[in-house]
Structure formats: C-alpha cells, structure tokens
Image (cartoon, rainbow, N blue to C red; front, side):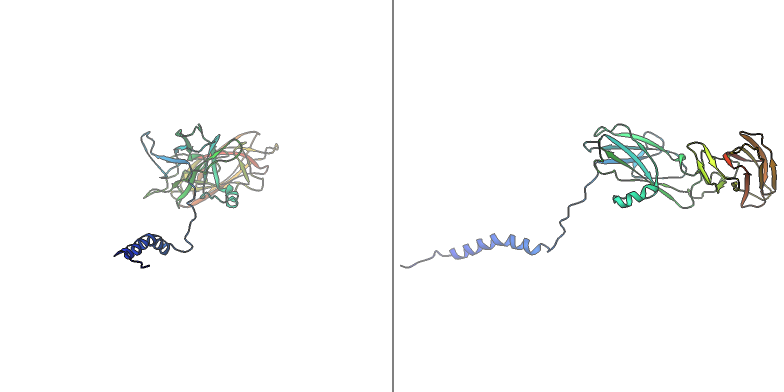
Length: 305
C-alpha cells in the first residue's frame, strides 16, 4: 500500500507546532530564576493630615513647619472594620513597627489622647497644643515630632496605624532672640519644661511634679536661674512666690550678679521682690535658696525701664 501526502501538509503541521510552543518557550526564557514573589506590605486603612494655617480653608498635608508653639489641627478617618476606639500619639522619634523597638520607644512619647467618633468612613478632627510641651523659644536645631493615629477593637488593636504626620519646629530665617522684658518671662512648677522661655532659663532642680504643683529642691541645693542680659549693668525686676518644706521659717538667701540678700519669712507662701543687676552680656546666674528646701516657686522677670 502506498502512502501519499498532500503537498504542503508537513510544513503546515510544523508551523502550527512552532506557533503553539513558542509563547511558552519565550515566557520560560524570560522568567528570572529565583524572582522575588514577596507580596507588597499591607497598607493602613487609617489616614491622618495636619492643617496649615488657622483658617477653616487651610491646606491639609502630611507635614508642616512651625516657628512657634501653637495649636495645630489634625483630621483623620478610617475604613478599618471593627474599630471601637482610636488614639493619637506624638513622639519625638520616628515610630517603629518592631515590638522590641516600640517598647523602648515609650520614653520618646510626648503626648497622646483619645480621638472622637470612630465610625467607619467618618472624617473627624482633633487639636494638639504645642505650648503644653515645646519651648517658647525655637530650638537652635530643627526639632521633629511624629504624630499618628492607632485603632483598637474591643479587646485588641485592629488594623495598622496611620502613616505619621511630621511636624518640624524650627527658627525662621533671620531669627533673633527677644530681649528680656519685651514680654514678661516666667518659670513655675507648672511649666518646668520651658527651659528657655524668652531669655530666662531654669536649671538644676532635684524634682518638679507639675501634676501636684510641687517641687523638691533640697536645702543644700538652690533654685538656679540664668538670665540673659542685653548689657552689663542691665537691671531686671524679679518677683517670686516661694514656699518651703519646713516650719522653722528659715530665711531665703538670694545671690547672684551684684545681689546678695537675706529675706526673712513668716511661714506659708512668701512673695519676694528684688532688683537683679547683670554683670555681663551673657548668661548671669541667680540663686534662691532655703535651708529647709523649696517646695514651690513661681518667678517672673521684667526689664527695669
């Protein structure tokens, strides 16, 4: 029996085979061995923004530069399911997702609070007053704060925290320190964190607790003030309210610059007023001491015109 082939049939079969195999072969050749197939990291369903300016029509964004401690407004919303509560947190260091780093980072937490309505999809707002913790004088080097919102279910956290909003506190171009007395300068138990307010500094305290409005400055230590003077011989009016731990009514001893005074006390809160004269154009030291130890102080300093 003789087998015959139709003209061109073999070429057709070969071409069909090539067309069928070629795409797979090409894909196989183009695929890299050991290619990264790691899925993209999950994204937070919670957003946070800060408003620039005090107007309701101010611009919203993920970062802001400020030159004075002011009240800032934030808006947030979440599409996360199962949210019962939400909290905002502010840190002076970037947040980390690592449990080990996060536990060590607790010391960097500046403030935190609970936000309002946590209804899914609802846009809500909250405010942070930077005057509660930031110095009134802008820092020499820009200081960054990181703010985020975390979401929690009834028993445990749910979802990822929002991306951080970054607030940078810095001096404006051409900044000059205000002259002491252009605004009154004050330091108190309530605001011990204001280490450089106007041109006045408070240093070397043993313990200050603003919650109970009480200081602990032992008898062998002193309330130590540094006053930045515009010129040698410049005079400043210092007014202080002071109280001690003891009941022996030991006198207050005040010295520094050209001042060396002993002020008697009769028990309870004592109002002390005196004039301080600077001896140079740099920081001048002023000490207020009591042998029984100080438990309260509130001092204001102004120029003598």
